[in-house]
Length: 241
Image 1 (spheres, rainbow, N blue to C red):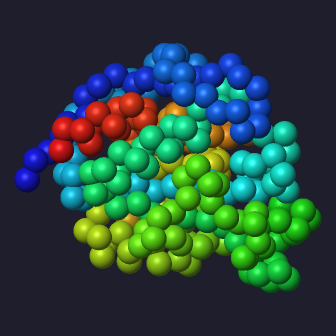
Image 2: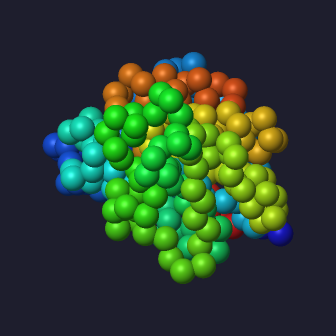
């Protein structure tokens, strides 16, 4: 079985374009999101088995990412403009290497009886099951046969079949993309750690409502709960297996 080793230094893709759906494919390097204290964790060697990888895409839904979504609220900061293009690149790379892809989405009953009392959807009337808002954005829409799992709380593991699905796939390493870094992505990464999975959080394949929240979340996760990598690094990993 062929393996790949993660040893490359961290990179980050940034754009200075406006908000909305004008996503950029710029490949500029920047240390904006990362403190130097993360470097030892990022530089550690990690063996990756191709048939044990899963790409997990979290909450990339119209309600959050489309200008007409009820939770869009002006969009994410411009630094996150490359989000969708980067996730789309990783999705293509995963499919090309037969790496399983799991899509996670949040949706509630129209009465919100299954939503948290603190859920913003209760006030905005958003993320109702079977509505346009809960659909995954067109640019990265699931293909026939790919796994799509509904959740009702920030963690993709909470009261969902994600863990049994991962174990059924024989997964060991989870590469995480999606929104928001400091909410659903971080909650999922922490729960993955508690279940003995190795998590890789894609720095430029995730986004938060502020750069500070994104940076803080990555620093916390990369220091213990997983490894922070760039989309370019993941593509390179998969190209070697």
